Image (cartoon, rainbow, N blue to C red; front, side, top):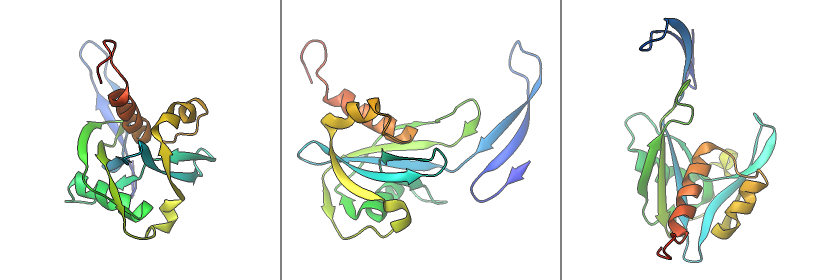
Length: 172
């Protein structure tokens, strides 16, 4: 129905088990990689950006499109450096998920890492926004105020928070 370098809209003829056949719209977007980098002071590298679709500012983790043939981990490393001017020491894959599984096909790869080296200013100034190391302890308040943007940011930060919270028996 529609095809551009950014999005494709398709009309599918669907017949799920036990349900009558129907038409269903499917949006295909890019493969995306997002990275949460934490320093030795338990702060996470974030960007304060304006997003015109919701018409608001919010905190996001660096990330972006995985180029054709590119390894998602390399894409995450590249995006962190381009958008923040920091080069992560290493990134570990946490999860791949679909943000709107019933309607949108856009695999999101989430990576986390500890430590980064400052290598200069962001080179992707359109995406950079304000770069800051935000205390992980402030994430729940940012979430409560609606200041976190994007599902990739939320998934990665919730993973970090869950891995930093003591379990019920007091173990980390």
